[in-house]
Image 1: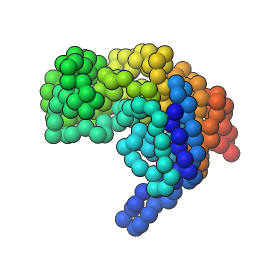
Image 2: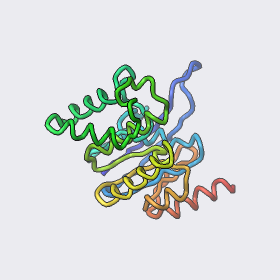
Image 3: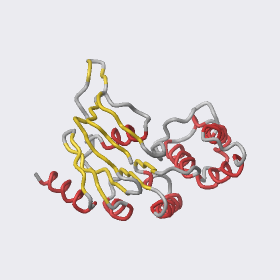
Image 4: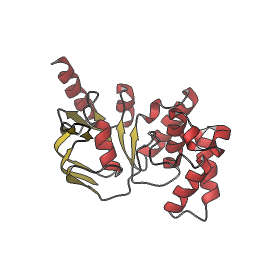
Length: 221
């Protein structure tokens, strides 16, 4: 279970504190639930995803993770640019206590990412798409209770997107997913519930279709 309690978030700008991105968000996400974050551009979807993943902190309030949560897939953050893909993979294996089967996991990461020789080159030389593919592959190499994804199904070429979609279908059977995607078909395929973000607030819907309807109504209004 993930509990978001009275969370406010805004970022600093050269002119001082920026506007509130999130304002008093209270959401409880049950275990083994597949959730889509829905809203306009700038509504705070990626911000909330980063807070849930623990790579950003609320300005006020707290996020309580009562389960194992992955880092956001496909955004390329958290990797060391001076290190190669292999070295980054080794670092994460050690971080999660997988010294004994490290080589097996690294082989799976390399195969799934499909970036060829670049796996042995510094991540700082990668394109954004290559970073996304590597980080997605690294996420899949470890067991989490909840996987969080920011537009992962749009990363890479058609072959990679197909592999990513297949991987998500397998995850649905054994873990929860919290997903940001601008593709309605993707949200309907992988998510059962939805969180609609609008004007800094968040509304929970048990049915993803109802969350999508709320979003469409806000656009029409």
